[in-house]
Length: 221
Image (tube, rainbow, N blue to C red; front, side, top):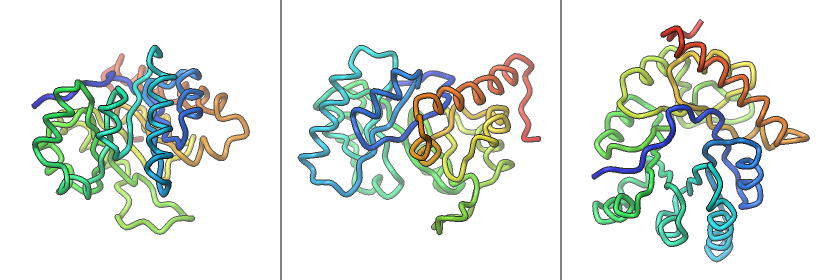
């Protein structure tokens, strides 16, 4: 089965917890936004998904819903993002529904084994991480690092999004690595002005990505 494709250049991929923030990121120039709401009653999550889909219906930005595939189909989102742990609960009938509805499918991967397994579903993109260790978080997986990220990004058949421990200073290097975009949460949440911060981060990544594609350059230095 086939899932909807995403733009070749995704740039900064904000993960937000409300429809209003998703809309703000879209207005600021994000090409793709993920609505990721955890630990809230399902009726609250459904209300936010419905609102986000309505507000962003005519925007040139892809809206991805984390986990809640049925709500994504019901309210007309552009795609669904699932973790590796979700795949055991997602059977072929659900994937067929996502494909038939024209949704994109994003999958999280942390290791080479998970990347290999994820490719069996032919996802629209893979989110790989954590790329760097975080001094403030204890992570269940070892950091991928730039060398492996670059290698994997150039061998998997779908766009790759990097996530985990990423700061603004990493974006030029990441933009040259062959990935399509960078998922960011903390850098935008901590910013005094998330809209301005997104535009700044987007510019850093896009410039490096454009130069590397114009010259054929793919390296991590």
